Image 1: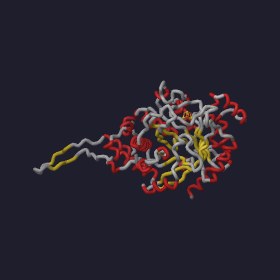
Image 2: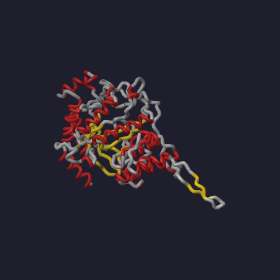
Image 3: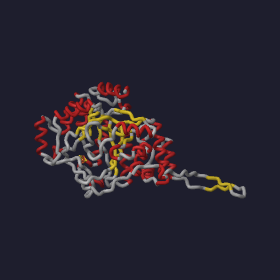
Image 4: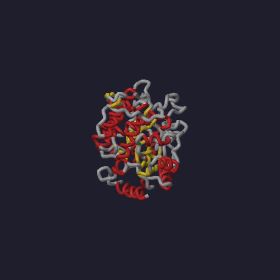
Length: 416
Ligand code: SF4
């Protein structure tokens, strides 16, 4: 369903004190309850640091206040980001879809021998990167399963034949190949150690790891991450902290609709804010909605609706502030472009003219011209960005080995 303000979701403006003149000419003070949501929004717009209770209240915002919530988030976004909304032109390189974890919402992962099981060979990585560069891509997204060498002997033999000792070492090779073809890698390889991230830093413009959710409950029996040791929240928080200590521009985010409750969703956003306050390295926060697919154990689980997404996006904006880049994947909610812009986002993430979204293969990327038109009609200009946001293009955040390529490519993007 496409969101429309014609459906009457504009909030009711409440005032604290409302003088009413009586027919007799006397004035009485009629107190009209001020919406608690309005108080939170005013504090957020004044720069206050929101509490957990505030965050929960915003995520649960009643329908009567939804219009005010979205307006406030949009106002804060406009202050920090103006009316430019960005995307990264990328090629998605699924280096390997073998994975030792089994998240119950995932269709990406495979076991060796499964139909579609695939580890990209170096010539495939080069060919895809070259083709992507020819189509104007700037980013090579290295997206892959977690630690397959721990689970699969066949895959260990593949790594051996490739002359590397680990998946992450192979990702380093893949990054070199993509750089040789003129792309800037962004690695999202699941959990990595501090040493692995340090090894990849000279070969990446940025890196990422979705926090997904901080609740240990989702790892318990029956939870979506019961069979996914790499989704241990404590380890994902640790890696995100270490990326900050290493001065790596970093992508984080939450996945909504995976069995978390509202408190857990709020705590996850707060965890990202707290880590960012310590290190300043979270370059963007993705709010990703769960999509049901027939082949997964969660095939019949309810998907978050567009209002739930909009409330969470607006809450993220108000919690994380005017300067944060807040992103929603456009291919997972193709009818909600206008609503999500109104909810305070300023980025659509990576969009590929070449490769599909291997994590959500049933959801095609939007056509860029069409997306630009819809942004334009809503009062926004769609602009290309690199895998690293402009505010991180500095000696502080870039390894000297990749900095010249990033700066040269930024000149192309900003001049274009
Ligand atoms: S979501 Fe990632 S970690 Fe989980 S099973 Fe899929 S590929 Fe593996």
